[in-house]
Image (cartoon, rainbow, N blue to C red):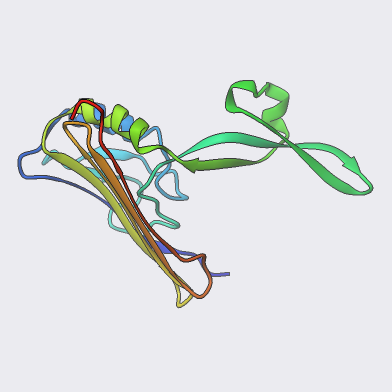
Length: 176
């Protein structure tokens, strides 16, 4: 079985002024690869994913996703498992014990901008990743958030063992 390995990077504009500690807390709400690595702040003030330093994360992500529903094991019917879905708010302790998986989607740029742009006084921040799974497929993802709330994301995926994707999305807050 092959796995996709790559790298997640954080960068910012030369004129960027931000609250690094609050940004770290904000970014740590999301998963960035399969390891559960979290963002840390280096002695020079740069953000980086800890847990692997410059090692290769497995299935890295640069565009955060949010869980919309959880799939729960239901009753067995004719020897087959059945499933039903519940929103995160509806989950009970029993549901967590019987969770089979989750349904997630890209977090909206509007929401991502609303979480991150208030932490940036000037300039922009960017999270990007690139990865490949042997000769099967490659992908690149990026989001950039500006201090005025503007945001964009890019996602490109190509190869014979993946669904082709070339996505570019922009968000402009109503006050810009």
